[in-house]
Image (cartoon, rainbow, N blue to C red):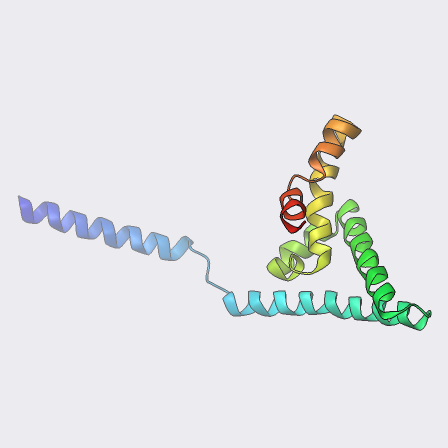
Length: 139
C-alpha cells in the first residue's frame, strides 16, 4: 500500500513538473539586458545631444548641465503625460528607469493617476509618493 502511494506521488510530481515546464515562459535574460542597455544608452545619447545643444548656445558647462537635466525631466514628464513612457518602460525594463527621465516618470505617474481627486489631495499629495523619500534622503 505504501509503495502505491509513493508511485502516485512520483507520477503527480512528474505531471506537475511537465505542466510547469509547459506553461513557464522561456527566460530571455540576455535579450532583456540588451534591450535595457540599448534604450538606456539611447536616452543618455539624447541627453548628450541636448547638452551639446545648450553648450553651442553659449551656456557654461554647469549651466548647460542644469539645462540638460531640466530638458530631460520635461521630456520624461511629457512622455508620461501622453502615455508613451509606460510603453518604453514595458519594452526596456530597467533601461528606462535608470536615467533621469525615469525619475521624472516616477514623480509624474502618481500625480497624473490621481488628478481626478483634485489639485491638493490628488496631484499635490501623490506627486512625491515615490520620489519624495528619495528627495528627503538626498537633502
